[in-house]
Structure formats: C-alpha cells, structure tokens
Length: 235
Image 1 (cartoon, rainbow, N blue to C red):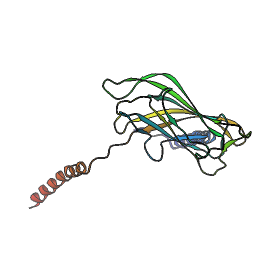
Image 2 (cartoon, rainbow, N blue to C red; image 1 turned 180 degrees about the vertical axis):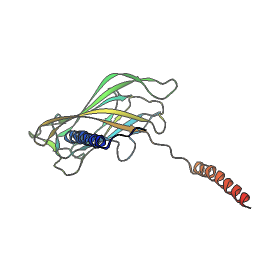
Image 3 (tube, helix red, strand yellow; image 1 turned 90 degrees about the vertical axis):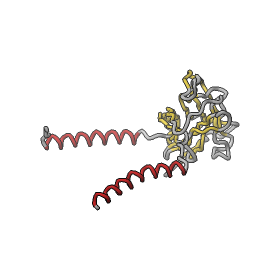
Image 4 (spheres, rainbow, N blue to C red; image 1 turned 120 degrees about the vertical axis):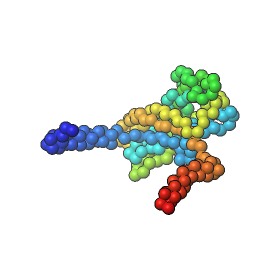
C-alpha cells in the first residue's frame, strides 16, 4: 500500500475545496428562473381516457428575484407521443393567478418520430417540443408581468400535455426525462435563459395485502427454521 505524504494530502484538500467552492459559486450564480417538477399530486405521467391516452403534468415554480414578462416562455422538448393535435391545459387568467387579459399561448412543433417504449409491436409516434408563451389576450398595460419578490417559490400552476392517440400501457415505475428551456427576466429587467431537466414517471405498483403477507411468511419461515435448529442443537 502506497501512502501519500501528509503535506501533499493537505495541498490536495485545499485544491479540492477551492474547486468545489468555485463550482458551487457558479451554480448559485446560475440559479433557475423557473423550475419544472413532478406535480405534488402524482408522478407526472397518468392515463386519462382511452386505451390509454397518457397525460404529462408539469408543476412550475418561479424563483425569487425573477419575473415573467410578456412573451417570456417555457419550452419542454422531446415529448414522446405528442403532436399538433395533442390537447393541453395551462393556468388561466385571472383564476389561474395570471394578470387580467393575459394567458399562455401554446405552440406545438413536431421534431421527429420515436418508438413508444411499450407494446408488441411498439408503435412509432411523433415527438414534439411544446412552448407555453406568456402573452396578452387583449390590450394590457405596458410592463405587465408575474414578479416574485420573494422570499419563497411562486407556484405558477400545473401545465399538462396529452398524447394525440391511444398508446400501449407503459406499466408501473416507468420514467421519461425531458429537457426544458425557460426565458424569463430578473426583477431589474435583465433577460435570462435557463436550461433544466425534469423527470416524470408512472405510478409504482403497490403490492396487495395478500402478497405482502406471503412475502412476510417467506422471510419469517427460514428464520423460524434456523431458530428451531439452534434450539435442537442446544438440547
């Protein structure tokens, strides 16, 4: 075994600490303006109607120190099974917390095709980018925006996108990871672009009580047999 001299260890530790400190400082300086996550009510990919038709749900939050100005946007890329016919749902004005006479304009752009990861044979489906743009629905005052003066996250609501057709069942515990691009502003008016990733999944199957009982018996039986053998050996 080769030992590293202590002075070299200390030097390496100092360099490592400096490197990590710089990385964390860069990460802090490059905070996300808008964060997309799974919704608080579920894993993010759920069957709705059909055979099934799948719904992708994204919870959006605006970080403190940022605002969404007119024509800022949230773009989710590479959504499998989505095209121009896919239904969407987005927070509404004013009940959805948006300023009066504003809303989210939706644009769906097909970027190619991919194989749906289920079914036999697995169907080939469209893949699309979906952009939600904060836009006026009528005449609005100049400077209309959605600001977050802090200190906590501002909940922007849930955005949903459905597949355009019935697609084979993905099964429990399946996940998709999507890249998203958000264009927003700092509170001082500086434009800001952020690229992030969000992972959505299907629900995880919960074992039935009978299955849990059998599993418990399967674990308990060998333990009981071992204990019985030990007792016999002691006798």
